[in-house]
Length: 259
Image 1 (cartoon, rainbow, N blue to C red):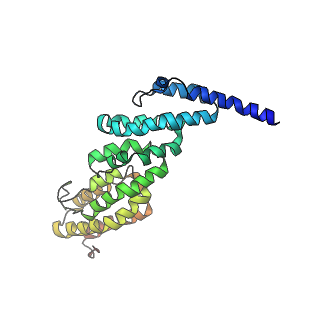
Image 2 (cartoon, rainbow, N blue to C red):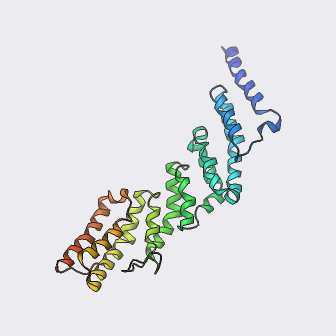
Image 3 (cartoon, helix red, strand yellow):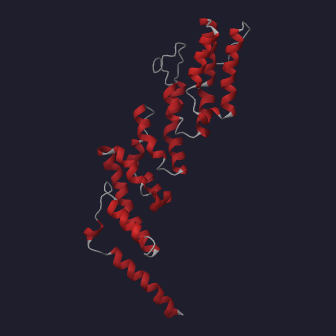
């Protein structure tokens, strides 16, 4: 039995040594042009011993991807998420977390703020990061910027977007990639009181007609994603704003909202 066990273990070791010790240039490959390595992995992943394939992934492919995050960040930023993402079926998110965690420059690059440029950088990575990594990224690096933007928010009754610190449309653009579980508390804590008070000032100061007030309301409501409008905690506040409009345009008394 021992002889048989030794023999069965010898073959995987032999294959491993043969595959992992070729001439050095056989393992030269470019993360920007991964097709040859992808073809190799696709062809051999079901034939080579798992330990050998693990060594290829961990010792040959992953280090190249980690290095590529620094290079592509400067030279080919649009290519970077594609480059990493195409390896998900082979490396799995568990291994790719090494790329996310080790590459500090990748994290810093994706954490500059919430500008339109930052959003376009982050957008493709939502499909690359696994859910746990994406949540971690959002919690650590995106929520602080969104929270500050809402804290500094000044709502103009004239709705001049991106003036007077009204960056709300930009914040809501991020709602397309920030999970609802994070966006709802942010809006409750940092937006709805300000919006209700601005709504009150608009109705009491401008005395708009119903169609004008509804146009104001629809513009704001239109900024919310369908996922947010499906949340009861959001709907309650949005409908409270509508109720205020209906009461004011009917000549009924409305109270000053908390702000």
